[in-house]
Image 1: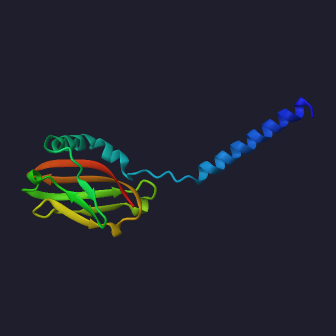
Image 2: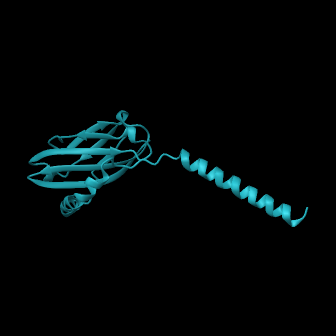
Image 3: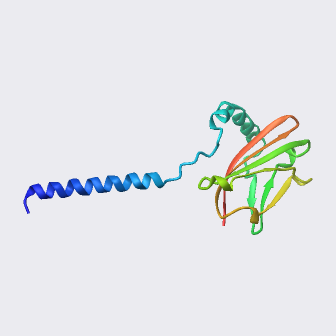
Length: 145
């Protein structure tokens, strides 16, 4: 076999490899986490301020997992005049499993959700609430097993 055939084989292997990569790229699911990303980006400074408000009070995790429940634990000093709160659970690999839950914690600052509401996998949780006209915000990653 002379060098001409070897070059031809290399070119053919390269072309087949490139076509395979293009086919694989078309099968990828590239969803954005937020449908209205640009609107949320404009209001991002308010989230930074709300996150700083929480960091002045507590740096602990807000979401706690046990065997049956996902527990949202609001610090007691931020539970006295609780107005409204939402938790967004975003599943990065399947947008159809995203959930938004409105919550009001009990007198101990706890709000419990059964794990059966969630499918297995990693979620990015965005917790946002208002207490005494001050906003608080925390992002946390949880893994449901």
